[in-house]
Image 1 (cartoon, rainbow, N blue to C red):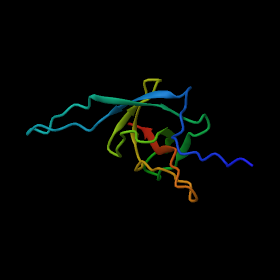
Image 2 (image 1 turned 60 degrees about the horizontal axis):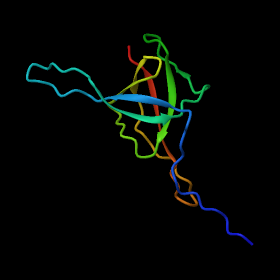
Image 3 (image 1 turned 45 degrees about the horizontal axis):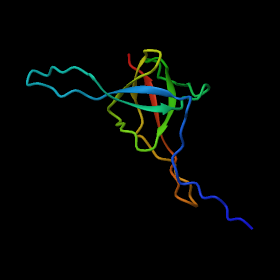
Length: 118
């Protein structure tokens, strides 16, 4: 009888997209600062049907929210912006989380959501 294989390595998305991470700027004494590309992460999984609408109030419009799954250990902060392969600039709106298997503790990827920068 063979032992079941234990999966402990992170998931890898071979057909995933490379995303550019744009870190929040450091400001000079006058409050000026540019957001510049910092590094890339990936390959990332952006599910085709992951775009959802976050409904606004009567005074604001709804915004599209996109789920992104990145390799475990990717350097992403809630204050970052992300450059998608299409050139669209989006802001990270959730704290990146690492879903874990409750039985083995396996955390194969990082999950976060982004929405379009207006």
